[in-house]
Length: 81
Image 1 (cartoon, helix red, strand yellow):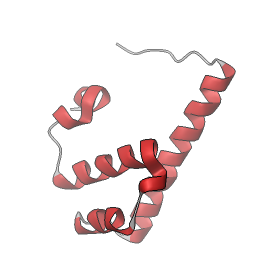
Image 2 (cartoon, rainbow, N blue to C red):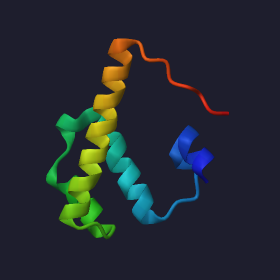
Image 3 (cartoon, rainbow, N blue to C red):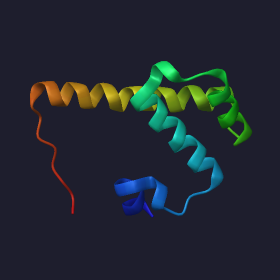
């Protein structure tokens, strides 16, 4: 499963809860300015509470920040096969 998620999470066998989280993560990563209350309601409907939603946003933000930092400094990422 992890390999499928790494390449394209949409082709992996995931629970509805995991799918909702990854759809949200994709939106935050690419269009954070477009996140609206219904997006959070979708996560709540999938079983996430507000604390978990905050954690999800923190993790997305951390990885986005790290990738920007690494790109700006020319850090080479070791690729796993």
